[in-house]
Amino acid sequence: MKIFIDTSSLVKRYLVEIGSEKLDLLFDESDDIFVSFITEIEFNSSLKRRLFDYSINEMDYQYILNEFYQDLKDFSVIEYSLTIKNRAIDLIKKHQIKTLDSIQLSCVNTNIIDKFITSDEKLYNASLKEFKNKSILIK
Image (cartoon, rainbow, N blue to C red; front, side, top):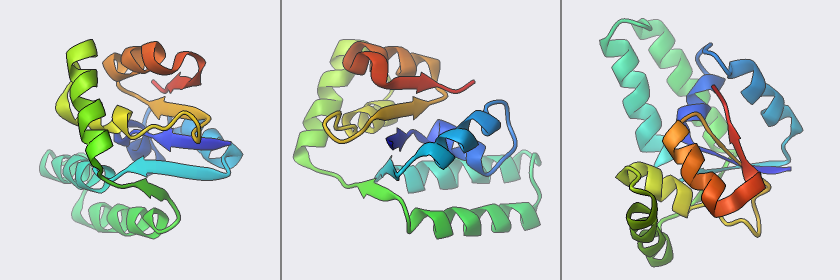
């Protein structure tokens, strides 16, 4: 199974949160993991916020960041293109979703991806309208 993982869910792979176990099972079942070109940026932002608000310490921050970058080497990263940009704009107009969410969703090619994984409810609802039975919400 080929899965595309939004950053909101990918964080659950590195921090124990509600939904972490479900995500781990999806990782185990997958043959290939796809992420967006913005995932690295969003992941760094999310992790730094957790360091700043003291939900993780400096040692955990460095460890998690290292683990993420080790895994990123094995992920298939969907790179920026004009098609993705134009689709993101269309998705914003159609679903009134946030900029980065529209980019995540526009990176999903349903001819390649079997499942789209997110923990963001609004993004999940938009993905249901776009992909029907290919979306999974991890909460």
